[in-house]
Every structure is written in C-alpha cells, then in structure tokens.
Amino acid sequence: MEDLLDFLVLCFSATFIFLWWRHWSVTGGGHKNLPPGPPGWPIVGNLFQVILQRKPFIFIVRDLRAKYGPIFTMQMGQRTLVIVTSSGLIHEALVQRGPTFASRPMDSPIRLVFSVGKCAINSAAYGPLWRSLRRNFVSELISPVRVKQCSWIRKWALENHMKRLKTESFQNGFVEVMSNCRLTICSVLICLCFGAKISEDRVAEIESVLKEVMLMTTPKLPDFLPILAPLFHRQMREAKELRKKQMERLVPLIRKRREFVDNGERPNLEMVSPVGAAYVDTLFGLSPVGRGSLGEEEIVTLCSEIVSAGTDTSAMTVEWVLLHLVQNQEIQQKLYDEIVGLVGRDGLVMEEHVEKMAYLAAVVKESFRRHPPSHFLLSHAATEETELGGYTIPADVNVEFYTAWVTEDPDMWEDPGEFRPERFLDGGDGVDVDVTGTRGVKMLPFGAGRRICPAWSLGVLHVNLLLARMVHAFRWLPVPGFPPDPTETFAFTVVMKNPLKAVILPR
Ligand code: HEM
Image 1: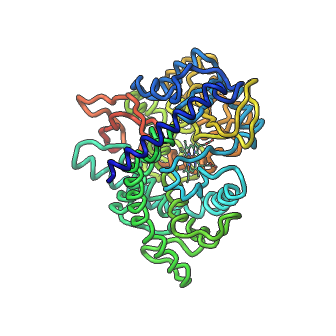
Image 2 (image 1 turned 90 degrees about the horizontal axis):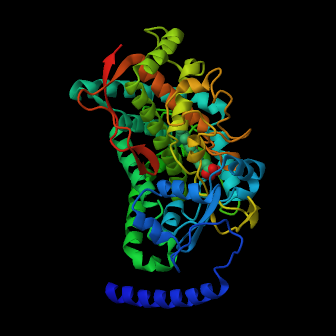
C-alpha cells in the first residue's frame, strides 16, 4: 500500500515539476534583481551541486564568497538563500534597518511539528506573538534582578560540577570537558524553567532528547524540495515519535509545577523556586496576541528552546577555551594569577568576582571570535520586499548572515587564525569591540539588532563562572599520548570533532 502511495505521489510530483519547469523556463525564474550567484541546474538550482561536494556548507560558502563577494544568492531547490558576508551589509541589515530584516522564513513541515506552528521566540515571525513571548522571557527570566535572585541555582550546580570532575578524574585519570559542562548548564536551565532540582540522570535524559530534536530540525533534502515532502513520510513519522518522547520527558515537570503553583505551596527539596520565580510559572498566565492561552504543547516548546539555546552554545565555548589553556600553559597561568589575585588561593569564586576579571573576559571574547559557536545566525527574512547592497531581497527568501567570515577577515583582525586574548586588552586590535554589533560589526557571536540573543549576558556568566571555578581548582594538562585535537565538526554548533579530554591536577 505504501509503495502504491509512493508511486502516485511520484507521478504527481513529476507532473508538477514538469509544469513548474515550463513556467520557470518561460519567466526566467521570477525575481530579476537578486544578488549574483553560481548558476544552478533546472528545478534543483544549486542543491545537488552542494550535496555532491560532500563538504560542510560553510566551506562551500567560503569559496563562493571569494568568487561572488559580500552578497550572493544560492538557489537551493525551491528555497532561495541570500547570503550576506560583509561587515557593512550585516550592520546595515541588522542594525540600521533592523525591523525590516527581523523576521524568520517559513518553517519546514518537520520544524513546524516541534515549534507547534512557530510558537517559539526563535522561530516566530516578527510581530505581536514574537514581541509578547520575547518580552515575557526578558522581563521574567533574565532581568538583572531575576538573574541575581537565581544565583543560588548556579552555586548548587557548580558544586555538583566540581564534585563530578573530581570523581571522574579519580576513576578515569582524566575528565571529559564538554559532557560535564553540558550537564551542568542544562541542570541550571531546567531549574530556571521549571523551578525544580531533578537528578542528573533525568537531566541527561532531557538533554539527549533535546539534542535529537536539534539534529532532527536541521535542514534536510525535503526542506529544500517541499514538493517531494510526501515521499519522506518516514522522516515525518520519526519526527512525530520524537516529539512524543520530548512531551513525555517534559510534561510531568510542567504538571508538577502547575500543581505546586495552584496550591500556593512553599518551596521544598524538589520544587526549589518559590511560586512566580520559574519561567514556566509566567507561561501559565500568558495569553499572547493571536494565540490565546498556552497549552502543554506550546509550553514544552518554549521551555525546550531555552534549554537548547543556552546549553551547547555556552558548553562549547568553555571547551574551546580549555583547549587553548591546555595547549598554552602561559595563558592558563595568567588567568590563574588573575583569579587568585581576586579571591585568594583558598577563596571561593563568586559571581561578583568574575565581573571584575579583565583577562578572563579577554580569553572568553577571543574564544567567541576564533570559535564562534555558530557560523551563521539563525535564518532571517525581510518583513516585505526590500533592497540590500543594490539588489532586491524578496520577502519569501532566507537571508543568511555568515558572521564567522567577519572574524576571519585579515583586513579586520591581525593574524585572525591565532588565539591571542591580549588583542582585547589595551592597545590590541579588539580592545573597543562591541560584541552586540550596535556600533559596528567586527564580531557577532550573539547576532545584532532586534533578534540579538536575548540571554547573551546569562550565557557569558555561565561560561565565566565555569572557567573561573575550574581553573582556580585545577591545573589543566593534556592527557599523555593524546594531544588535544582542534579539528572542527558541525552538529548544530561548531564543535570539536574529538571532544576534549584533559588531566586535572588539584592546585
Ligand atoms: C554563549 C552563549 C550563547 C550564544 C553564543 C548565543 C547565540 C545566539 C545567536 C547567534 C542567536 C541568533 C540571533 C539571530 O538570529 O540574529 C541566538 C538567539 C537566541 N538565543 Fe542565544 N546564545 C547564547 C546563550 C543563550 C542562552 C543562555 C539562552 C536562554 C537562556 C539563549 C536564548 C536564545 C533565544 C530565545 C534566541 C532567539 C531570539 C529571537 O529570535 O528573538 N541563548 N543566540
């Protein structure tokens, strides 16, 4: 039966493609003044040229940038991608004309399953739904007062983190950086979202489902040729099964919290945050314009996006920094000296200390520059047809900002391939850099303008605290016989292909 269905869908698709091709060949493909780009094949555009190159998309984009300049078009099946790479055009689009480029493109059918029809801050179109979700998140979860109020959550998670590192080092002779940092940051974010302290085993289960969701929602063939989507019903079935698993992991936390809020209970060993202090509490009462009150589906999506957005980005930054500290003991010693200078050898690193650590800030910025967690921002879209760099940008195309190029550009940075934190200190080429891009774009780890990461300072706080604690307590060294390997790979963010393992010696 399924084979017959596939056959019918194939016939239907072939007829449709034929008619579409006839129309396309007559009209010349529609929009006339798009930025230039590599010539593509009929129907599929550049899609199969990209697939056949068998190399990560960012390397293909790097080559095309050299040939076509700061703004170019790629026709990926039915989707048109306009890639913007230059600092000037990125600043113009995101900051000077921010509202025009602040929307998001259409979601693929698989992404729609997980975003419940674009009901998430990251995927909502620029409009009232996005505004009310983002405003609620910013005022209720990451206002400076709320961040301070929740410092005990980070204290608790860091204590567990340090104990776990000691145990792992004792058992294996080394520690794995990424998995430990992910677990710790994920525990913090789950506690911020649901107000609950849960066991590390449950945190790890949630973390692994959310990682699967991220991988499932990265663009795949049917996203570029939605016309063939019916042929990929197995993928859709898998997506729905995964969504069910995600609901099963998170709904119990939501129900427990709702009971706690409805009964006006006092904090206890498991439900640790008082009523009103968890992100989910604010979602129970929220009724965004055009959406009405939020059900469990929407709440699962909104909490998942926070945990996913905040875990990998920060954990991988810690991992890259530690790679350089292991490889370059001089930088590690300088950082250690700064930490000891502020808290003493036996003191405890607190949040107010890390704010005063100039060298730590320089090391972290250099990591964001040299290893930006994502090489592109999330896909943007124009709210209406507009113009950029002298070309037409229709409202239905993906506008992709290739921000990693800006930090690799030798015209902007001295020896851009080197890891040199000193460039962010007095006299360096990065000393005045504005990481939010408002005053100009020299590096953009969090995006810029309307869609800038709303929680970037919380992310930086997690990175700073983890690093300061870890370097204060231990000296980090390579595992004998296994030098760290800086090869990159792409798993949503740009991570180390072989996760960093290091020997830790108590100071
Ligand atoms: C080092 C840590 C982080 C980095 C490097 C980072 C980076 C980014 C980037 C590049 C974007 C896309 C901006 C755009 O499309 O223009 C983004 C969006 C977002 N990030 Fe972060 N992020 C970090 C931490 C966090 C944390 C801790 C949270 C939540 C607690 C978070 C929540 C979000 C959300 C909700 C969006 C979507 C914003 C929107 O579309 O309006 N991020 N982030």
